[in-house]
Length: 299
Image (cartoon, rainbow, N blue to C red; front, top):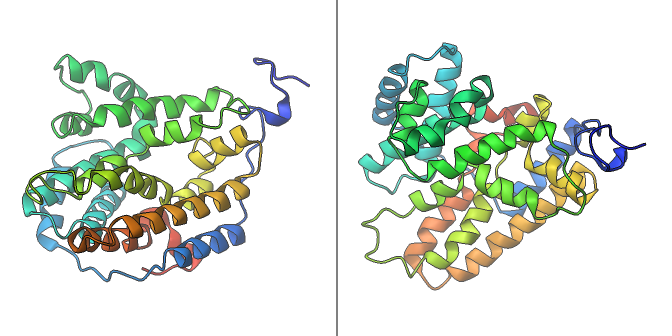
């Protein structure tokens, strides 16, 4: 039986195929295997209270119609990420990254509730127009790179009405690379004054991009919310296989990336000292945003 709006068979059409959410036990085992494959140990970082107070002041000035609980979770998630991953960068950079992170978490979690703000962000930004949403107005002043992420975020939200074609196997990563907010954070690792020129580390940036986006442990949170417009489910449709198989393959791919980065930085002690903490800093385990404590994982 064909879909009513496209010629593909129902069994392989992402739009009309019923969501197949993964069992809790499968997610527990998969995440556990992933953490073991990258030799995870807790970085045991402490809170940066100065940074948390500063970010709280910035976020409080947004005056957006969201719950105090959501804002508190956004502040905690933004600061936890910065505290875990970017302890080596100057305070000015820490503030910038933390505020950028909070803005992008807001866009990722609540963007669909204000689709016009997301859809018109790029046009308003290019034209120098005011962003009606206070969070996006803040974001517009932070990073021009944001254009890629928000434009793709809009495409990602449209995927709920667009069938994923079987054999479009490069599309899921194409969308992930652009819609995922992780790529800029790879570059945040290297402040302008860290080294005079980037040629000594530029070759690991694509690998670190892949690690950052592939090692994102937000899948459990998305499964609980019934979200299927994410990388695992979209790739499942394109590859014509189950989400569990995709998740297992992704673990293998990301683990292989980590091994290759280890080899690339092996002869550069300074670079290795940045990569190793970054690899082990699974901040997803520390912040309630990702709800991994429900699966028994402790930071």
